[in-house]
Image (cartoon, rainbow, N blue to C red):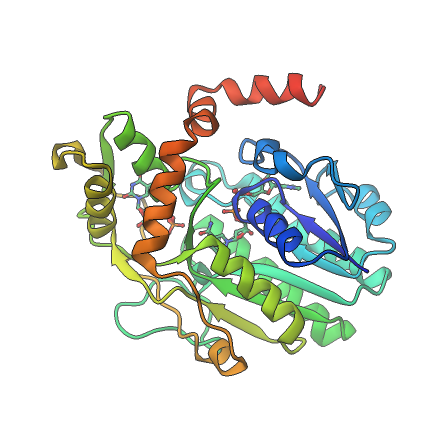
Length: 333
Ligand code: NAD
Ligand code: TYD
């Protein structure tokens, strides 16, 4: 029986990862430590919230006491908790530094004290910065360009330092842009799908030619679990979907998928410091035997259908009703 401490498990990828774990394993225990910021949503975990092998703890990864209490008999820590939206990091970087850097430090210290078996730091391909041609390999220098990616770079290298300095069993993953169910509708794909469903404009930054490599969230979850069990301590692993698309292509896919007019597209002022292209070379992970399983257009169809069929989930968030709702539902302050 292995015990997982998943941080940020009420967010997009963390909640998908917890569902993934329970579908795959029958002999595990999962603790989900999440601060429930605007991005944390317990409705993502409704189907599993009463399982005896699952425990939700509302708390901050920066809080040493909570972290120490939970860490005691944990086997694996998977650190998803973060402030994750680039646009917000441009407006107010404070929480990014606190959670992404200091919070990771608190987790690492506690994990060291309790000699946990594996610590997976969920980093991001954004730590490399932008690349015009070719793809980044794991040994390339980090050149983050937003407060978000800079804070994630700090956490990424801090985790590595605990491997080098204290011989801690740390693994670091750098994944490309995820999409799928339960993604907060401020990120490109869920924002554009939900706006299009409501016949609202889709705001394209700049010329719309910025490129991201898109991966279906369940492939990311599968890769994290694969690396946890097959990766080598102290190593970094790039994870990519192999689906580089520019934002105009993504927008057109969404509009076509929903049968909506291109008139909904609107070009707006560019994001400050907007990275032109992200691209990671995933041969290191492939050489261990992992590849994504979901075909891009099928995964996009699944995602569009999910937002079409689960309007109860995102309409509450977009109307601002969700915060009030969960406070009542879960009897919070
Ligand atoms: P998200 O914003 O949807 O979820 C983040 C979760 O962390 C939320 O539930 C939030 O409540 C929680 N959280 C925030 N601060 C906390 C704190 N101080 N203590 C405890 N919990 C806290 O983010 P996501 O898209 O699911 O991303 C998860 C992780 O994956 C992040 O570390 C992100 O950097 C990384 N990542 C994301 C992508 C992507 O495309 N979304 C790609 C690569 C890596
Ligand atoms: P985003 O989903 O914020 O992810 P990231 O910036 O972390 O890659 O944005 C993906 C791309 O979509 C990025 O090039 C910015 C662009 N974008 C828009 O054009 N309009 C939008 O409203 C948003 C949220 C993003």
